[in-house]
Image 1 (cartoon, rainbow, N blue to C red):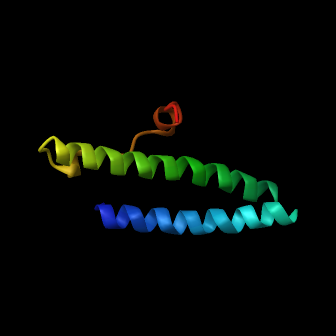
Image 2: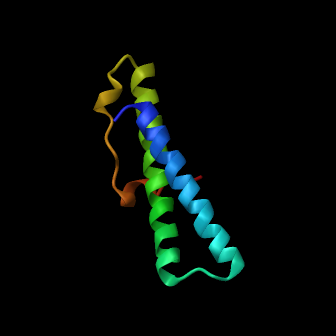
Length: 80
């Protein structure tokens, strides 16, 4: 997956996340919606991490293709 594809995935997930937050704000969200929000949050964190890895590899003169999606247990432990 290249940077443009990752950004495209992020854009789609953010759009879905906004729709789900609108349902939540309106009081219409279901438990499935809330579970999906959590899943999106983790997936977005993974995508942003992947982009950061790719950029770091490029800056270090390495191929960005060597970057991998890290598991949720890893990216969710990062401090903001």
